[in-house]
Length: 320
Image 1 (tube, rainbow, N blue to C red):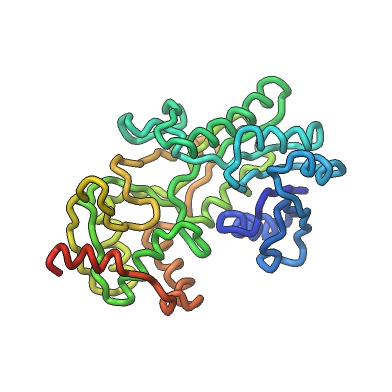
Image 2: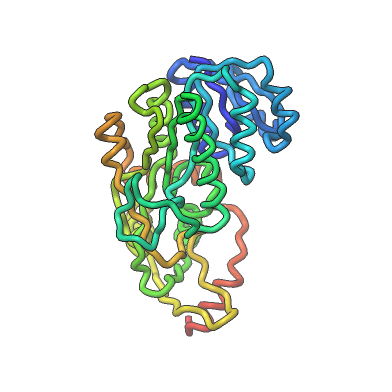
């Protein structure tokens, strides 16, 4: 199958390229050409900024593909998604749009399924992703374009651009305490990047997936504090947790990963993708953390320089 992928050289895109080439697909990526060393030699690259719509039309004018996977976020607006679909009008077989679980109204009871109302609970990010979904679904309804919406949650794994699991690795390998926001009781759900890539590769050309949206994530929900405890157990480092009360107005919050601090539960059901497509994750949360830690050590990230001055100030204020 000829597959066109937006991006391809950052986190999810890298793993997606690996999954697609492993499965024997002919892969072309369209991106800004900034990290060509991350692509295998078999992958063809079209250099273009997707937000330049006129250039995108010119770049894709001669392309005809069996599948399109839109994974790059620049940030990507609904208009950018429309422009990509316009540039391939009549020359694409199946379009996958990588959205997010953050399109859902997280003020509602958990778990969230694919029918949970979408809102702007998560602000501009949700706004852009909802607009991208709608651009695809309009094409499906009006023109019969086969489209599928993929909604991941917190994605972990090697090359993660979000400093989440690596945030805790950094502190545990240095024997530093970890500041815990409040009680640390908000639930989180993580999925491994290879499971996400494998799921998208498995969906390509599957008629049952046309016009559908799917949550794609791991099966385990864990509290914030439970996540830290699991990581400490997996990497076999002692853990010292220091509860940190909410900051005074205008004061800095205790850092806790890159985007794990928000005050609501985030739990999603994967019944639909299991039931309709038979797709399930291979990685447990512990196995995903262990594999990511191996990569972290192999890359020498345990030796990188990190500024802990904010945490040191908060620890002093807490009498530590």
